[in-house]
Image (tube, rainbow, N blue to C red; front, side, top):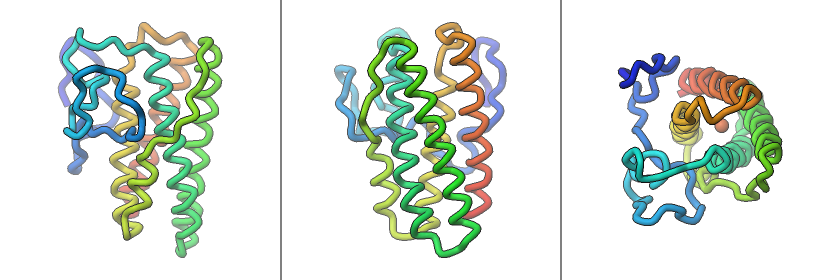
Length: 186
Ligand SMILES: [Fe+2]
């Protein structure tokens, strides 16, 4: 992937392997931007609208990611419950715990900025659990994890303090590693 403006190359190729760009995995939240068109991939109305049209604060981004991570906990908890293969059950439980760790971290960072963390759970969880097979669920989970990586990459570095920078670097890395592990399952 080539990035304009001399940005460092990402450590993960988000669009490899058929991962669609900019699909909205939040779901269930109220549109905050006039004119958004949530039904169209690449038109989530927040960070993918033309530059300059939307100002999304770091708190907005963290709230969005908190909803997504909560959705991750919800669907992975159910997937771990239903898995009959002990290896997969353990792996899904590890992923769920990772998601939970990032929920707690985002909650803490939001409070540190004086914001009230959202109580919402992203509708992504129900989209995953509505799929009939475990393979389909894992495939959608990979897309959701890639969405999280992309959202982290969209955070302007200058808006983060040192604590936040370290947190999001870790969150990104864990998601990239977990995507690779998921891809080996399907
Ligand atoms: Fe996640």
